[in-house]
Length: 475
Image (cartoon, rainbow, N blue to C red):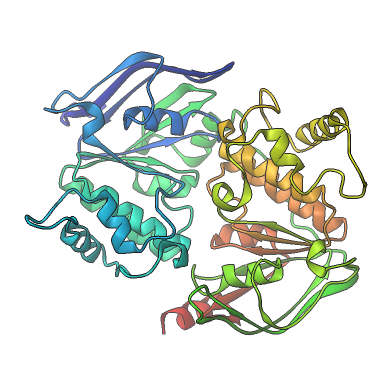
């Protein structure tokens, strides 16, 4: 540890248990002023539990936290940007900023957002103040959350998976800004799964596994392979590039147009053919019509133009399964149990009448084992599962519907290396069984590893190359 830097916050012997699950086990960690401290580990390793305790959102069962140089409570020195946004979708950007703003102009009822506007300007971000949050891309929503946290002007800033929804250019910009913040004395706590990002920006890395600290080292002392082995015990093998075997029939989109929520045209005359047995990737800068196109193919959003689904019975969209990019908002009923979430729309699809509960439980138990959904009980609320296990539950549910088409949007957002490979393998298995798979992702590494062919999207149109897409998106 660099003793020339003061300790901003120190946690000693923190432990936290949820039922029979030991989320944190005697964790000790020190954060230094002016440093970026990365906390890494698999989903379920205890990262989010730890930072939520540091931020005062959770109370540890045992242990202590101190901020030696703080005149106020430790929780009051920590601001947090959550992985799943704390925004009100039906309100505008301005109204969301006002809800969290602390600066009030004398004689007015509503707080000023001048500070937030200044921070956004310094970051080079233009805030669409009158736009509703629900009409913004996920990347833009992330920016609003970061601005909110910085406006609190606290000495420690925690970011939980801040780059999961950002484009490569946006990631680079954010990392530069984090370094600037450290230069003026801020302490940054960064939770991230992409080790290349961690190695490029962090000063210190702490690795959690099964709720314990297995290593904490200066970044300069370690490499990616060492950190990965600490995280997972044994670095999981990657995917082997496959030769797709096409099955009879293809999904055809012919001159499709889709409007955004505000009525403007988000998808402009897209034509595309996806063979059954093929994985087609669509990349590009977030907010260029990808989500609108995905929702149109999934039957969630209306469209103009032609669309053909081979082998569909009844309504064509009954053959389409959808993996949304925001699993908490669109993919799960968080207050319901693991069992109930698995059974939504999946169990008994080919049966009629009442199905005995014991039969449903037996079916769901089989899926939990088949898809390696790690839970202490299928009766637990699904919100208690790690992000990776929540995503695997969604994958289990949609694949057991036996779809002809799968539409997935950023399917591994916020997942660790092992969970990402698990999701990729299941999508490949689906393709090999004859499913047409359409993957929308802002992660070029994901598209390279997963897709049989990749095209790009900008300004609502398909492009052949990333260079052309970026040029189109910024023109």
